[in-house]
Length: 310
Figure (tube, rainbow, N blue to C red):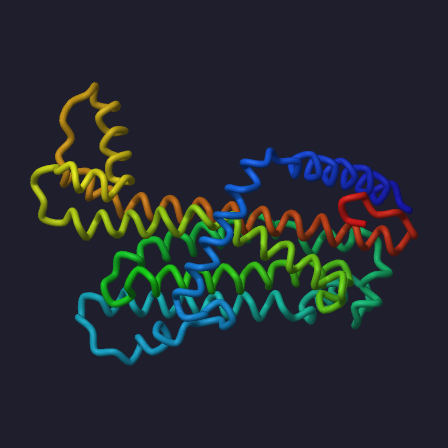
């Protein structure tokens, strides 16, 4: 084991210990997490079972719809986003460019087995910057989908469904990319188990997002054209009430017109979706890389896995 690998193994042990410590949640927090997971899975089901595909058919078909000319650029941008995600998924799901990178560096590899023979320092070159790239991808995708929610032709459920599909596809591709980078087969039993864990984690982390984005859209629609607040509106749209209270606090308790609060709703959806998606994909990429590094070193040097991975 090289000095680089020895240090990496020590760092990985600390990483998995921290994750094990964080998993010890109080019962009420576990219940809230499980409830949130069930809720988001139900929302995905309500969109027509899109999660098993890559692109929802209603969105694909939108390219041939007769829509207002003002919305055409938006629809084209949404379809362009889908194409970009598809290309990213295809890139991450094929180890060929990983082989090509190593060959360019003078390391003749053509199979995953040959990749596994390389030193960890060389393998880490492939995943350098992956976390940043995935986090940035999540931010841009989340911002776009948060905004698309407010486009009439897309509709809230279709937009949320599309976001879930894209996140599912990207999550799968990122975990696959990390496995290939360290010579691991993501279709093996251990690889599938890891992938399932990562996807469950992604589902759970996205649970709050769908509710906030839909709530912001509903408040935006119901608040359009209103000039006065009503108690019913406040009760029905808690997110608008929360923003009103925040703006009141910032203005020393002065009255906040409803139209100003309603105008903030698209920004609330964009920031929430972008922030959560960026965090989810960045965290998933980091954990997937650490997992693949750990499995690679454990198999290469016959080391015992950390207890929470054994």
